Length: 157
Figure 1 (cartoon, rainbow, N blue to C red):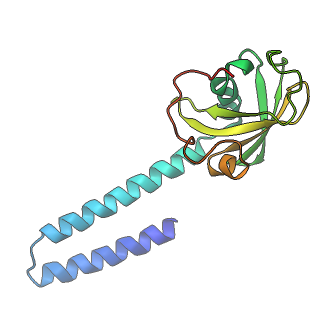
Figure 2 (spheres, rainbow, N blue to C red; figure 1 turned 60 degrees about the vertical axis):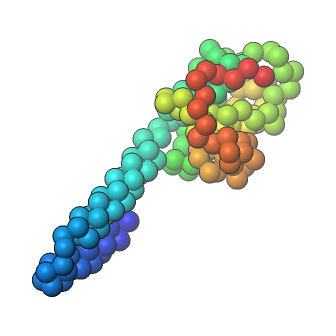
């Protein structure tokens, strides 16, 4: 990605030099520079968001997604960094569901937005496979439209 940005920057610099050499108005250059800045900022923000997904972030996102998992103290390990995590709960979830196996629940990040989801692997609800971002949609845990939605408090039911 950095190589692509460098090539884009070189191309913009070359185009700007040609434009300035011809006496064109700098307005075009300003607009071009603003567009490049927006691309760099958005790409950097996306990269930072992905980079910040830690096992602790994923563990915290489980009870933030559903009230039934409150107080369960999850710990997670990486299966595929920033995509898939295996989580185990220190305490069984609430007993509203007699067989948790196959149950899916959304996960909610620290900014209170749905960032993925998890599927229970065990009937007692203490073992979960969690997916972040689009992979949660691919795994049919959350819908495309639900991913990224604001979730100010854990869901119930």
